[in-house]
Length: 151
Image (cartoon, one colour):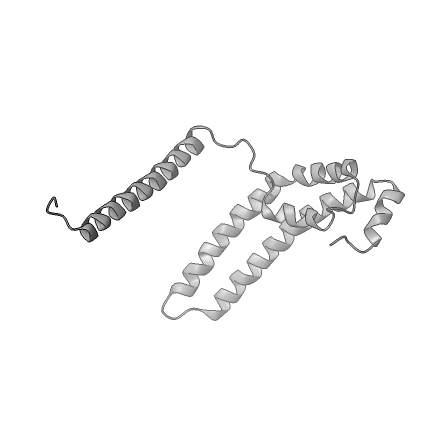
């Protein structure tokens, strides 16, 4: 033979294949990141908080009515994103309060109350927009909302 045993040759070939597969994966990941940096998506859709508010309506309204509600909710997206950014800051502050050796429970509770207030304000804005759009729909369209949702 060539000085390499069959077992050793199989290990080398297996290692080469694994290395090539890993390199292909990493090259694909890097290429994907570069594409997203160069050509970011214009609109990544509504934040999860807005999608949640619309989820209970899916399948219960005709497409044109659903489009009106979605448009009303999309109109409050900038306000919702501002609330989300504020919540991120409040959660960072909460983390700092909790991370100290002897956390001040009163300060932690106060920060939690502040977070709940911000969450309530965000949800109220989204619900206000969706409810106003729903109330503007004809009564026969709104009547479907009283029925059991499709599964």
